[in-house]
Length: 62
Length: 335
Image (cartoon, rainbow over all chains, first blue to last red; front, side):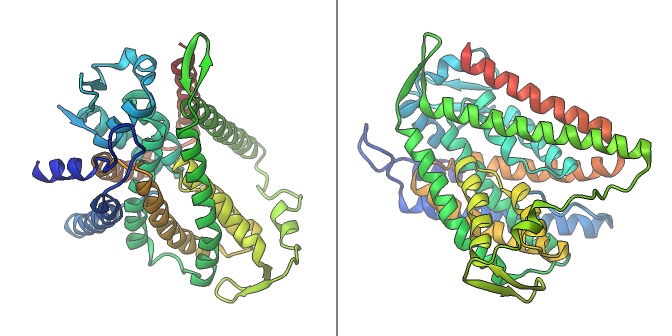
């Protein structure tokens, strides 16, 4: 839950109200790192499931 | 249980006060807007949406991007710029999974991938800049209401895209039914348009040894990259439905190489697309996390389902779903 609050916090614009969105450095970094990391973890989970249940899962859709 | 989306809330308040009217019937079911203007989506609805779209993608082999953004806008009231940016960021995760899992199946032509990327970067940036322009283009009157130009344009563009895909799938099911009844070879006598494009010799010419292409105009590769990149930057779709046929029929790349190269290009393309959309504040990180997990689960279920059940009848259901979505989008816009 703390992580979600932190994500929420870094997603706030740095610009004053009424001005166009100005991103925080952490927000841009997390947008790039978070899906990459989650992709690696999810691919690992699928591999473990395949080994455990001796089955062939899908290759991942894009 | 609901989940508050910070970036979607920001843009909902900044640009789209009229969206509250447009999606009013769904308020309380799928989303709520607090008096402070925070947009919260039902977690159950988001999970169902992600799993369902992943299921469709896994079972029909058609990407989920072109359905995700319209549905997020339809049921969740998420502004189109956030729906597109978040969908593209989610695609970065999906592309990572696909690259890790499918790298053994296809060869990668890195030279071609990087040349395509050069065209794609410009395409993604053009698409993202066009979205940025629409975001701040103000409102237009529509049937006694004011609708943001972004909402109107994106609805029309997605209707055209979904309609085109629906008609193409319908033609395919009709053709396969005809072929099955006549038991003839699917190969037609005509020369594919791509073969004619390969005769373009506008310099500089490049060779692609890994793909077995002796000489091809660089502009052709950059053009293919630009078109698919533009679709990614503007609509949040992978562009694979353009890039894969283009790689095979326009550039003459063998299928096994085009599979790996397409995934490699998609990964670096999604990385750049995510970067530029996050700089513009179009990415909702919490939404991305939920969508990536749920679409991955749905995708695996879809693959299992496809092995057992998918045939002409289920493809027809998919076509009905596409046209049903179009009808909902029109109703949402004009009501």
